[in-house]
Image 1 (cartoon, rainbow, N blue to C red):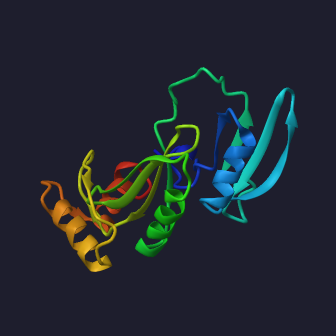
Image 2: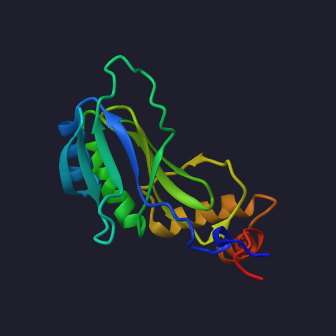
Length: 186
C-alpha cells in the first residue's frame, strides 16, 4: 500500500542554514570561493540573514545567519556536501580554496563511489566538494588520492578501490535496488 510520502519526489532536500560569527566574511567566502550568488539579505528579529544559491530555480540553497557564539569551538555541522560535474571543476574549487588563508584541513580522497575534496571554511565548518563515479561500494571508505594525476588515473584508482569491496556494483544497479527498497517502484 502506497502512502503520499512513498512517491519519489514527495519529500526532497532543498536548503540548509547555519549560524556564523562573521556573516560578511562567510558571504564573501561562499560567493568568491564557491561561486554562490547572494539572492537576498536582510534582518529577521536580531539575526542578519544572507541567502545564497547556485541554482536559479532555488531562492536559496544556503542561508547564513548571524549569532554563532564566538566561544563555540566545535561546529555541530559534520559536513556540507556540494556535487560538481567533473574532475576539472573539482580541481578548480581546490585551486580557489587553496588561495584562502582561512581554509584548513584540505584533503583529496576517493570513496570508490565518489572523488572528493574536504576542507574547513573560515569558521571551521567542514565542506565536501565531490563528483560521483559510476560505481557503488559500501561506505564508509576513504583513501587519499592525488588530484594532480590524469583524469584516467584518478578514475582507475577509484574504480579499483570500489571493485575491491565485496558489495561492488554499478551505480545504476544500486539505484534500482534503492528505488525498490524505498518503495518508489513496484
